[in-house]
Amino acid sequence: MATEPTARRWHRNPSLLSGAVILGLLVLVALVAPLLLSGSAETLTDDTRLGAGAGHLLGTDAFGRDVLARALVATRLTLLMAAAATAVSFVVGVAIGALVHLAPGWLRETCLRLIDSAVAFPSLVLALVIAAVLGPGMGSAIVAIAVAGVPGFARLTANLAATVADKDYVLTARLLGVPGLRILGRHVLPNISGPLLVLLSSSFTLSLLDISSLSFVGLGVQSPQYDWGRLLNEALPSIFAQPSLVIAPSIMLIVTGVGAMLLGDGVASLVDPRTRGAALAPAKAGPAGPAAPAQDDTARAPQASDGAAAGTEQDGLLTVDGLTVRAGDRTLVDDVSFTIGAGQIVGLVGESGSGKSTIAMAVAGLLPEGVRANASRLALGDLDLLGTPPERRLATEIGIVYQDPIGTFNPALRLGTQLTEVARVHLGTSRRQAAKDMVRALADIHVTEPDRRLRQHPHELSGGMLQRASIASAMTTNPRLLIADEPTTALDVTVQAEVLRQFRRINREHGTAMLFISHDIGVVGVLCDTVLVLHGGRVVDRTTGADLRRGTVTHPYTRALLAATPAAVEAGGTLSAVRWTADAHAAQPSGAPSDDLSDKAADRPPAAERSR
Ligand SMILES: Nc1ncnc2c1ncn2[C@@H]1O[C@H](COP(=O)(O)OP(=O)(O)OP(=O)(O)O)[C@@H](O)[C@H]1O
Image (cartoon, rainbow, N blue to C red; front, side, top):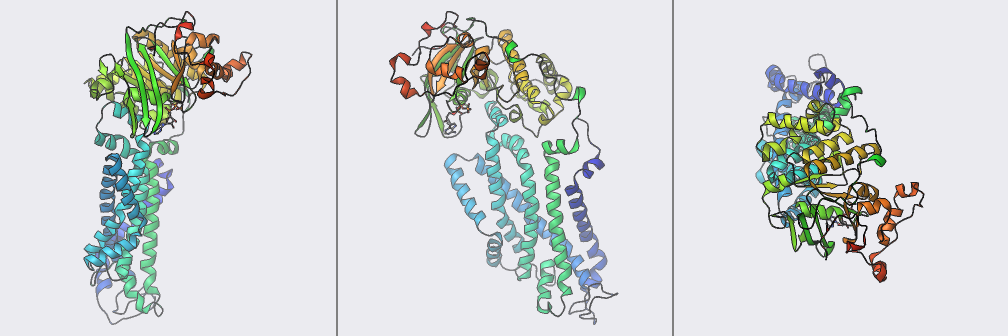
C-alpha cells in the first residue's frame, strides 16, 4: 500500500490537525512561560489590582502580580497534573478491564457489576472523597482523580473486548491455540484502540476540570504553587470587583479541553485502518482494485458428482455420534449423528437457528462460554474432539472458513501477517518461506497480485477476494477437515460460483473432508455429496446433493425448503413460505424424518451418516 505523504494525511484529518496545533501551542506555553514570565507572575509589587492596560494586559492581582503571566505560567503544572492522572487511569483501567475480560464467567460478571457501580458514582464526588481522605495537596489530587477515572477505562475495555471476542479472527486464533494474553494484545486491544483513545482524550479533559475543581475548593495545589484551579480560587473573593482575574484561567481550561477532544477524535480515526483507508486513500481502479468478478454464474458452478461420494462409513474421518449441545437448560442441538469420509462433502442445511453453526463450533471446539457439548463420540480420525485435544493438532487438522470474509480477518493487521501465522507458528516455517508459500496459494485460488495482497489491510480487498484468501489460509496446513460456515452467503452470485468451484477443487485435489453449512439448499445441492436437513437442532432428513438437484426429495420439510428456494421458482415452481413443524409432522407417521437413506436415489453416497 502506498504511503500517503504526511502533509496530506494531516490535511485530510482536520480534527487531528487543529487538536495538535492547540495542544502543541499549550505545551509550548507550558515549556516557555515559566522560564520567561516567572518574574512578573510571582514577584510582589505595589501595583495592586490594576485594571487591564498596556503594562498588564489583564491587570494585576491583590499582590501586584501580572494576571496573564500567572495564568500562562500555571499551564505547566495544570497540564502535568492532568496528564499524570489520566495516564494512571488509562494504564490501570485498561489492565483491569483486560483481566476482567479474561476472567472466568462468574468472576467476570461480579467484577463487571462492581465496575458498573463505580462508574455510576460521579467521578468528581469520588475524587473529592478520596482527596479529603488523603488530605489537601498536589499528590493526593492526582491520586484521587486517577482512581476516579479507572472504572471508566476498565468498563470500556471489558465491554469492547467482549464485542471483539466473538469475531471470526479471534475464534480462529483460539482454534490455533494462541494464548489468551496474546489474543488480547494482538487481536483485541488494537481493534478497540479507537474508542479507547477517544475516552483517553475526554478523560484528560475531565481530569483537567476535576483537578482544577479540587484546587478551586482548596483540596488540590497549595500556595505558593498555583494551577488554573488555584488561580480561580484566589480570584473568587474579588470576582465582582475584578472579574478579569477569572478570564485567563477559564479560557485556558476551555481551550485545553477542546484541543484534547479534537486530538482524540483525530488520533482515533488515524489509528483505525478502516477509516484511515477511507479518509486517506481514494480507491483506485484497475489492476490494484478488487478482483474481477468471476465470469460464470451459479448455474455453472462445480457440481457434486451424482453419487460419487468418496467417503464411506468405514473410512469415516469425522465421526459425530449422538452430539447434543446445551446452553443451560436449553437444548440447541439434539442427538445429531453423521460421519464425513476423506474427500467427502457433507452439507448441513436448515433455517436460521436450526443449529448448523453450533454443530460446526462443537466439532471445532469453539463453543461459546456457557454452551456444553456431549456425544457418544466426537472424533476426527484418532483425535478425540470431546476431550482437550492438543492445540497444535486442532490448529493443523481443522480449517475453518466463515460467512463474513471481512470479519474473518483482524482489520488492524496486514493480510500477510495473518495469512502466514499458522505456517509460522505451527509448522515452524520461516517468515520469508511462509510468505512465498502463501503467494503461491493465493495465486492458485485466483487471487490477483498475491504479493501486493500480503501487504494490504483487509478493507482494501473485495469480499470475494478476502473469502478466497481465507480459504487459502484455512488450507495452509492441508487440514483433514475443512468447515465452511455459510462461506458464500455474504458474496454476490458471480463470486459465489467461483468460491464454490474452489471448494470443489480443493476437495478433489487434496481429498479434504468438508462440512459445508448453508441456508441455501440450492448451493448445498450443487456442492455436497450428502446433506443433513436440520430443524430445531435435530436432523429431520438425510438426503443427497443429487436428490436435491433433481428435486426428488421425499421429506415434507426438505420439499418445503426446496419450494422456498428462488431457483426452484425460476424453474417453474411457486415460491412458498416454509410452514412445517416437527411436532405436527411427528403426528403423521408417513412423514417421519427419514434417517434411513435406503429409500434415496441410488447415487446417494454410501453410508455417509451413521444410522441411528
Ligand atoms: N451462546 C449461545 N447461548 C445460547 N443459545 C445460543 C448460543 N448460540 C446460539 N444459540 C442458539 O442456538 C440455536 C442454534 O443457533 P445456530 O447459530 O447454531 O443456528 P444456525 O442454524 O447456524 O443459524 P444461522 O444460519 O442464523 O447462523 C439458536 O436458537 C440460537 O439462538
